Length: 293
Image (cartoon, rainbow, N blue to C red; front, side):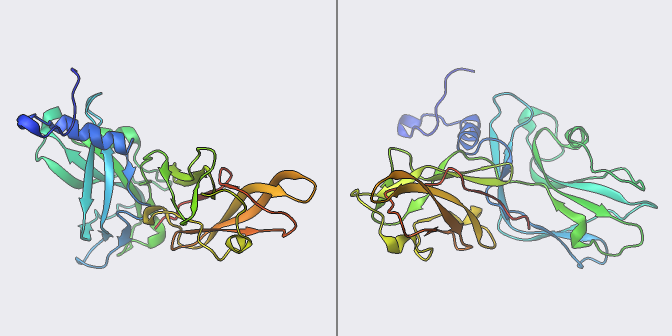
């Protein structure tokens, strides 16, 4: 493919759909949701039979039909009720899949995004559909597995415990944290986060912008030193290790502190000992699992 570029505005320079999909792929590599709680799947008692309710959300779907296809952004601002096929004589695990049908890459019944249910095989020991089975059922374009849903004989509703979320946030690479006023990156390593396999990883270091010591009050565990964005905030407080300089009257070494991230995204640190002073904080040892709705 010849060299192309996105979004030149002068002289009616063309921006193609391939340019847009490459832009999405560059900003959000891979397939996954934007946030940890996008497209939550819950049982529904509406419709008079088995059904699930799919909440609002956004997700990036990497094209699976061509090497240079790029990615699609799918989104919904409303909840949807999706009727579910009834069980057979034995239990079955089905896959809920979000798809994008694109006639540019093959024959499709209707273009655009859609929900698709790929049924598993009924068995006393059922297994969810494989990736190959979903690939064979999905239209040309892109798809992502959102959840696995187990249906049991004789049940009129789907139990919450029988819905297993499979859609994880797409890895958008390292993204900067918002730091408290008066702080900046230490030695060119801005505090950042990234999502990989459903886990949030922190990295980088921070220090007072003007140099000098971090005030004791800022290390009390009560002060917001940084903030993580909404899509990666935990539903309950998580704790991890934060490193910093430890300088006493006679030595300089590394010190360990307790870091914590609250549901509102606040990142704070609690200095374990008051016997040393601190010049910078490093977050490279801090990680936590995203909550699954």
